[in-house]
Amino acid sequence: MITTLATLGFPFAVRAGFTAVFIMRVLQVLAIITDPCILGVWLSTIGGNLGFQIFLLYGPTYMNKVLQLDVTSTGFATALPHILSAIVKFVVGPISDRATCIPGRWRLIFFAAFSQGMMATCILLLAY
Image 1 (cartoon, rainbow, N blue to C red):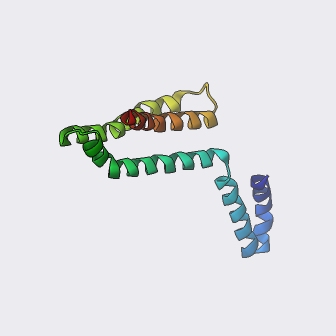
Image 2: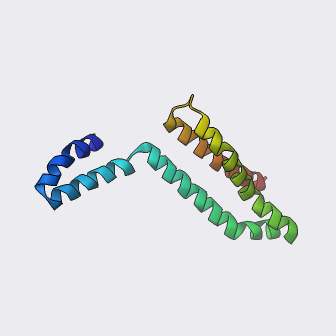
């Protein structure tokens, strides 16, 4: 609804002046940032970055002090989830681009969740 209003109203806004053009642009941006697909990507990115930062800061200390791993094992175990996540992203990215049997929206949601799920699985495995 917002997208249609902003798109159809834009030519009239140009004739009306700067304020109307500004309002139309705000409506277009509002339509983009309230799209469920965009919100899902933002949520996935925020969750992935938050998990990365927490694990990067506190992971080595947890593994060294609580799990009693030596420094060499701690470094490898800390890097493993990030390495596996990067590998999965490089492998699954081209598959996502070529999977035309799935609609674009569901492709984006599925493969973003799959790439973040690999890191989450590795971090959960450390708890056990």
